[in-house]
Image (tube, rainbow, N blue to C red):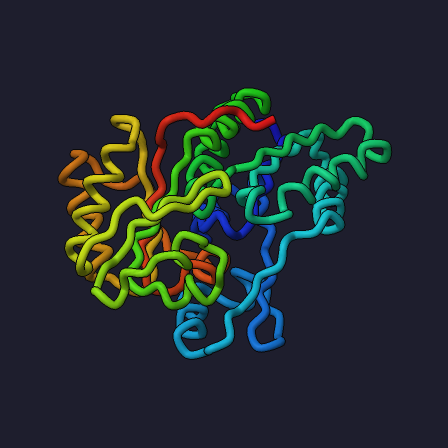
Length: 293
């Protein structure tokens, strides 16, 4: 393993604390800040997912999370450089929904003259949660196996172009209040008991299916999501507060595909801040989107 290479991601990736610790020395997870009723908390340090779900259900005011600033990235680059790191791979939350990716790029430019022999690659994951958390952990494994930084960057960029995220929504009140998931804001079927399957990728949100009731939307989600996956590729799930529905969905997806999820994690503060505490998130490898300029 090359100790001069490091991967940086952000806490929106929803990888487990166990994986973060396992790949310590290869991986840095920079936390977002979340503000609840005027008080700021550091994600994954001051507040955990289960605590945050309770806040979302009890508070009328929508918490807000801030972007990671260019100054924070500059400080992290300098810190790693002082430790002997000479190549940094940054893979962070969807650039269409957050300035975090742009800030990582700006920080790269700002330290270029100061840290002349530091190489920084910035990858826009084009997505959320384990859609980049999963490939980041796989990238750590590749570095451990001795693969080059360039090959790992190519792998992460390829995943970004193929990643697709879906929300199986059981209660859209929070999503509508947050206004961050535009497809939810335009969904009008709740009075009839309709539940949506929402697609997210590269700044796009769209209601793909709607069904009457929770079991029906789970069946619709399994049918739609499996039809969009590249065969025999990994899939991941993020959960919230509906263990009954989560188990049913995972069991049905596993039966349909013939293999289980590569990762199942709790939805963290960043995603649940916008998507709410009653949903299932599903992350897959779908058809390739054109490379971003």
